[in-house]
Length: 355
Image (cartoon, rainbow, N blue to C red; front, side):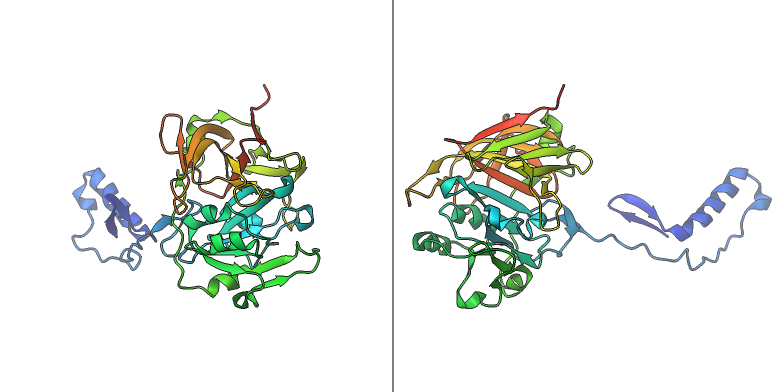
């Protein structure tokens, strides 16, 4: 069977033998060898061409998925990064992770899942003043263990459902897990939590994506990069090393591989590093990364890094990334880690390959 799809002619597999036979006879020029004028098609010849299933980009990864496959809301969680909270549960399956500075020179994560939601995530900890501006563009759900009343009120005043440990609506979805010491032991039944909120919409796309790493902005215009060395404080200095065999950046913390619960090193397809201002408007001990702002950025994809500028115009607006020529930066399809490195005490070092 011959059909035309998107301007291209397709021939069903069972038709190939018949078409070839006609072509061969036509080329001989011998009328005695011509086939009869009436041809009875075989069952294979009459088979119908099946239209391929439409594919669309996953909103938080840019990978192609069947249309309608990802209709659930995103789930963000305030994930602990204290040594006693490691290894965390579910970080290896995130779509996007934000790493932020908190008090004491430590960092915590705002981790977000939608494409691939694990059964358990955590350990979760308390909210901080920058988290409402980070999470608001995603909508969906935010899971955390509480926090200062002023910070909780700020988070409640967002278009995001607040799932808080100790509340009546989280009695069956939050619990303390064995093997971790308190307060680093609160985990969340992620799939169950999402299933309890079928009315919530899927997230909007946050970043622009290319079709693959070589066609991403960094892949096309970036400088070759062996590693990314970051310093949030004297206590927290994560790093990323390019691994060509997996096509990902491998993560370390304080000089050691950062491992998931199965012992595999955490990785990312894209590492987006933003320089942010820190203020202490709500608590003299708690830094707040200023997110409704703009600043310097680096985007690392496919073993290369491109310099950029980031901007976020409103609490509910996504982060925009543009290169030094003003063009939108496109990431490669896959997971992304966003590093919010403080301007005042942090450093960013992009290390080229050895000569």
